[in-house]
Length: 154
Image (tube, rainbow, N blue to C red; front, side, top):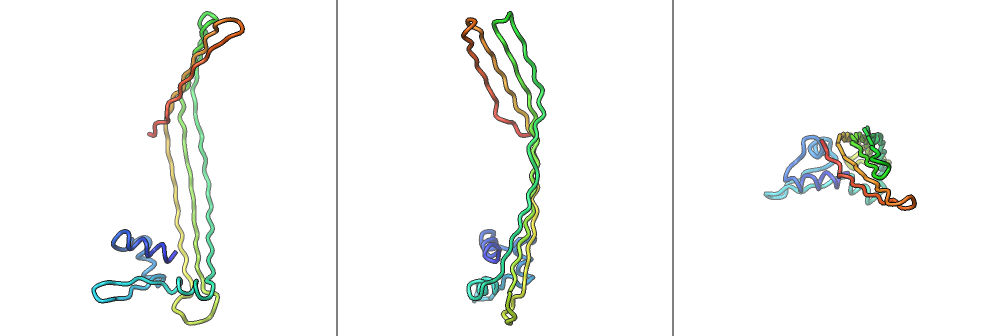
């Protein structure tokens, strides 16, 4: 996670107040002045390489996709059959991530433990259309055609 926060600072030319800035304030990332520049490092990264930092991540997900559909069909002289559907798909997806890094030792290296939690909720509603037709050429032969639209997100 320390590497992630450092990459976030470099990519955005500054600290994110809801992520990397909190990591700096908590001591997860150290800012070391180097002339006109600031070097970023983490005692957690050095500890992970040297002694086996305990790391744990738990991700819990939930949600699903549901579709409400209204359909209709018609029979024209027992030769042509047409049908169609209007669908309204509904999406909800949630994920909670809990990440923890902890020094298992008792050495004084400037890092004891840190944790980071984040939540993601994605919701969406769309609409789609499906239509089809079947032609009864003979009693033993039927030809069918169908078209499905791509879902339109509302």
